[in-house]
Image 1: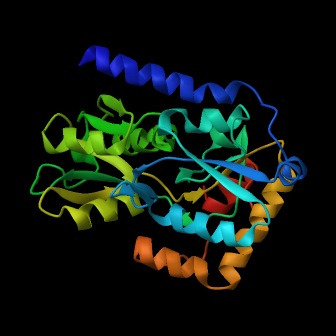
Image 2 (image 1 turned 90 degrees about the vertical axis):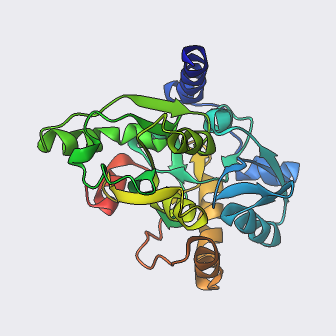
Length: 284
């Protein structure tokens, strides 16, 4: 188990290596000249990206289909493990990530983000029937699972502060290459709880109500959006126009309702490009 966890941690370190430098990403003119936009997605993060009968599915799959209708160039999709996805985009292997990425200060050092398309407040998940975890204080010292390289790690200090305010402390943090593996360990009592964004938590509990239960918020507000390298401002402007198109036609709300069971009327309509802007919009 220790060897496996070391492997996961190494993958997370490699995945976060993008924070140390900028890469030579292509901007819109080069993409249009080549005739192809290269996007990276994952396949194991429902309801955003996942597989059904061997075929891609989820909110971002439907968004990708709409983008193919809108764009005047081809879209080339590659499916990658989450732990290396953002690093691959930052190093110029792909033009953007089309996946469920949460906006964080760290990521804003390397990426700009399209206008958000969903809320990303974080909640904890527990086993159904576990009456020992009914408050934030109850999480003190408990073992928590998160996805390696995810925004949940960047915002764990918020939970740490919440616990310390209650006289408790943050327990051991175990990182996983994907959430299904974390949930499996939670169900098998190798973890006490898992932290994820509220949309995924709702989706999980709806699908497996006898196995998992939704807990309480463990962070402040947040947003999900598509990351685009800092040195691709024209591509960011293009994708912002696409998001505005989706909003104006009502298609975005249609897909939000289909996959998330709710719509988001108060999301920012502009791209998010700095930590200061993000903090102001999220009310930090």
